[in-house]
Amino acid sequence: LANPPFNDSDWHRSDEDVRWKYGLPPKGNANFAWVQHFIHHLSPSGFSGFVLANGSMSSNQSGEGEIRKAIIDADLVNCMVALPGQLFHSTQIPVCLWFLTRSKTDGKRRHRKGETLFMGARRIGTLLNRVHRQPTNADIARIADRVKRFKSLATTARRMVLGDARSSLRASFCRAGCRGLGARVTSEHEARRSSPLPGEPSIRRGMGTRNWGC
Image (cartoon, rainbow, N blue to C red):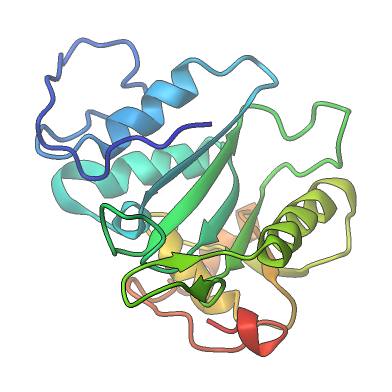
């Protein structure tokens, strides 16, 4: 679990670093240096979870889109959760949670090869003041329960294709606007022939109760 600095430009990059398996992260933004650092240190059946700025789901600057596409094609993304802004005292920008795993077929959980859970939770939380929002215990429990069900059951989410929009994770939320908290998106071979999804969508449809509409 980690909360690395968002969009950090003050870092040193070695082009020969063994961690850059999925692409060379840009010198002006360390987001995908952090992502690949976490992947590099995962055990064969390990999981990692971290929070990044929402831009990490859609940015295509300086090769970030290609790195993200390579990570998705490697089937490392287990779950993505889009969250609202104002959750941090240091910044008000909206953020997202990344959950990665090296193995979706470890035998301890449901076989999830080729699947990624996308969850829209941009309306959770209660405003404590003009600049700070705090998720409730019920909000946190519902997100956790949805992830647990995704890993343990085969038919709890609507099945969709990710298609050629792998370079933008945010695009998948456009199709994830269905009833319930999330959508189980597949990246099967047939999906490569589907039409690309929009590159810069916003979550508009309600997903479950009003508090979870995004």
